[in-house]
Length: 235
Picture 1 (cartoon, one colour):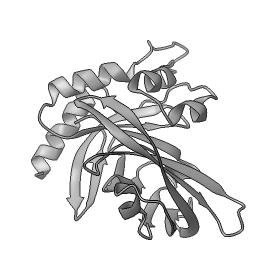
Picture 2 (cartoon, one colour):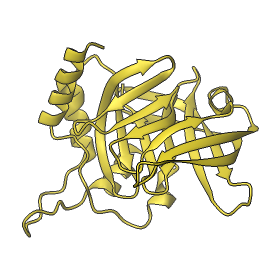
Picture 3 (cartoon, helix red, strand yellow):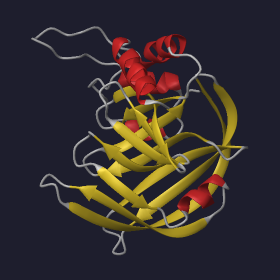
């Protein structure tokens, strides 16, 4: 994608008002997210925007998704929601380096995914800088069980890089239907449970993989500060 086209896409997204918006959220997100539909995600994200003591009308992600797909046809789009805050965006492809695709929203926050697996964030604060996946992507896309060692690198508040090594168990599960945007398919649920060597810290990721090995939906941990990100491919 050319720089000019990137700028046009970002401007179009901004004009449609689908940049990350801080929303009120409930405490039941973790229970909902593993099998959430777009309708469920909308109920999690809709809230009141603060501003000069006056509440803004609720914003439904489904409206942003439908409008963006109409206004920006023919390009890949992905819905992203930060579970902690219920902030959401409809993102487009900013660039690609090998198998890693970087997606950008109107506010220029980016997420980079290697065949669907999150490898980096930018613009969130205390960002995920990189991930060494230890073979996790291959196992997940081929829906195989296994155990890998993953290394996460982060940027802390003092602009220093820190490292976290996790042992991750990957287990394929049931098949579910996934419908979002132009995508309607059956996908195998693959769960990944990661913990430190001491067992003192752990998190879980969930991936939905279709018959072609495409990751059509996922819930992935980004960092302690950012928390879990929900991804839904729209086109």
